Image 1 (cartoon, rainbow, N blue to C red):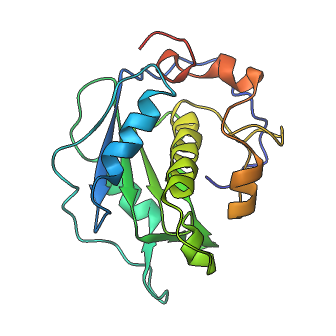
Image 2: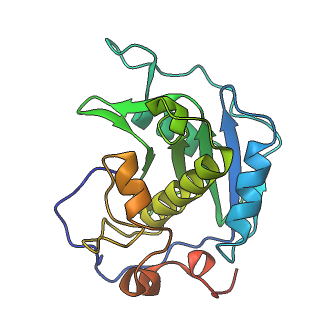
Length: 200
């Protein structure tokens, strides 16, 4: 998500129901990785996580005048249009590079109090930066980014706490530095299905 200049704490609202999380593959995707991500997510949140059987079958919306970059907002809208059960959140995962017109790239996108999120592995992979491939590191970063975007789905904005998972990250270094957990203030505002120890 983009920095909004608004405080991390949202006003009182009806909590988003998160009863399940469904990962859906978009475009070419490494074999077995989606299942690994779902298993890792299941250890982090109470809501059950699973991989949707059918990948998202849409024409990828490329950004004009950008070489091989996908319009993240247009793709998120298509993901949001997919039918899901009440209380289910769709998380699109893709190897394609995501961007928006005003940003060079984004790791992911989600709408506050929405019903879907989108995350790209492209710039979470060490090899994107000329470093040796590290599947475990890529998976950890991807899970952290999914949890970040799910926080936005749950209604939370970016947090000023440098060690909170809801901190805005404009680089992969910040993704690593901000850690893998939300601060206690943000934790208290998450929907139960995303809260550590909360009911599913």
